[in-house]
Length: 200
Image (cartoon, rainbow, N blue to C red; front, side, top):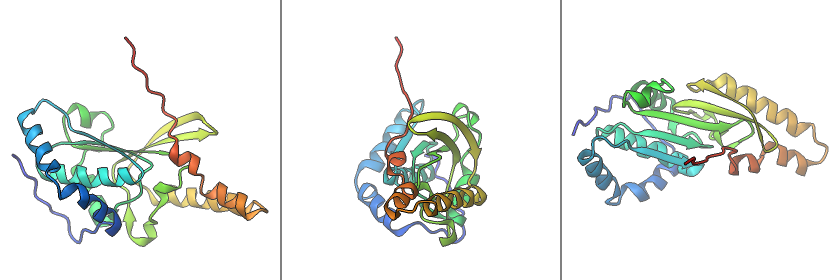
């Protein structure tokens, strides 16, 4: 097994997410997966998670990467789980090439968000947190996909703009209940409008 060296200075992780991940880490499952993948080297390890599961997928991806595997991680509506130092180190280790990472069998991380989801804004980067991976943003209007874009790595300016637009929308409502609903659009977090089909 090709164990990777962990070379990050002052890494930190969100305490709550780290504690949640421990419920998986402290089982036989990680070692079983590592052993299985080492026996089946032609297989690709894909880790997916939505919301809190997305935070757990980030921890799992890091653990399996450090164990010498090359995972592909997909998160949907995931919060930030790591501080800036650790996020930058992970981004430097994982491929940022949208397609090339999978083709070259390198570790890759894709972070799917919708333009209306509030969870990826949390915890705030002002608190020292940062996202990892290549962002794929699905622009939605109601329940329809208008467009999608690949934004690459995390940029604080995009988050600032999103937060500013949310607050402006919140303040435009005379009824506080409607303002809160606009600010915390839970439907956009629960339902990612991606159609998947299997053709024969």
